[in-house]
Length: 569
Image (cartoon, rainbow, N blue to C red; front, side):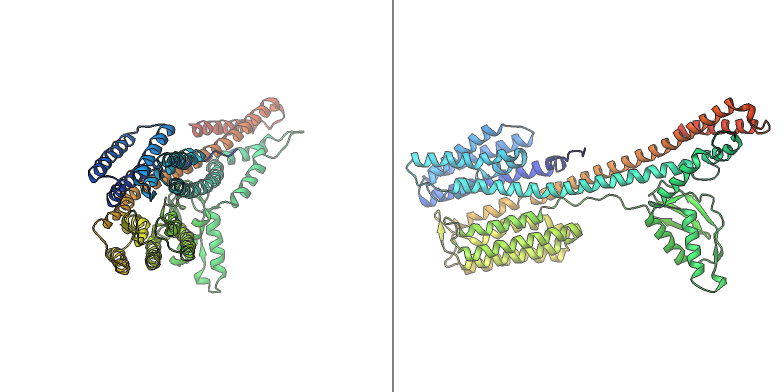
């Protein structure tokens, strides 16, 4: 039965809790600023009351952040009740639009779906339901925003978690197959470490068996057939050093009629050393580069278990056969899902209470972003962090296109008493993406990326039908809220990636070590059975054996037992 795969929360044990806490705080603080500014500009609350309410709510958010950062836990039902009351109170105070109050519950929805799965659906349903009832009782117009924005947070959390989880689980399945292959390969190496070499216990016992020939009993050694099978099994996974040298010798000598180029390898002292297929290829390349001729001495300077680094001396020259590649893991990279979320956010330009951009423009933008996210996923999977420059460049290009189109086709000039700045949407996702990817690109390109962001903002601000007021600049808190902490999140993602890689490597090494021990144990048990059978034959048929052979037989059996005891130690 397959071992159950761990949830993403266990693999990304540092980055996911940090991301949830930090993003939750930043978004909630941005919502507070937006709610206070809209209540003042629309005149729904006196400025002093609005500022006092905003300050109290910000203090509450900071206290909650510190509580959760220290490991505190509050049940979902209580947090859901608090957030529902929070959203409903601000919605009642503002009246309309309700996007900023509704976004207060989006972080809880994302956290709930990541940690509790389907239970996260309760967040948009309960928050939306409580807010709708409150608005109806307060005589305010109802809105879908308290349902939509928590649901949007839920979808974002689900997308990010599923994306990382699929990548991690795919790597874990591959790692399981690699461990199984490493275990099988190590079993063969363990068997060969005992059975192959100069005058091994298997050799001694095989040579002894013909001396035990008596009527009615098998003459052949029980180890002979097993040793042939071992050679056949080993040939599918590895090659002996002696065999690899002789094959190269034959191929080299047949490649030219010039006899002065011929090579002869004398028997190597450790011809039973096993090489993996990549090491056999590396040995052939090294011999081709050396171009030896005549009698060529080969010595093993340092032997390692199968798959490890092997160091030889060929014709007086040091030849290193590198170890097989270590297991690697893909980086925990949030770039592709962030781009996909940015595409979904492009559709928000068409939300009636926001920019009023026609769907005919936002739907193609969203489709383009999703295609870009798929391309980014493929590129990152192939090249890792080396792909970040290309992905960031393409993302910034798409973001500029989104900003230009949404600003040009702006339908709602203002909402909630503030001028709509649709071009800020592209900063909501390119800001965090840039903060996480900048470290992987050259310094000059970093300056170009930041300069391009500023150029797009200034250019789209110039396209607006009227000037931007100081109060309108308060909407800058949204991209700042999502960008702040993105670099720290990248640090934790890298740390979790290293921890994940270390766990995969340790499991791989443990499987190989266990396989090697199993292989040795198999051979030792087989030899012990053969020794016991030989001893029993000597006792039962001593009178039928040649008396001149009996002392030698007993000496050899004692020698094998002694070596067995040493090998077991």
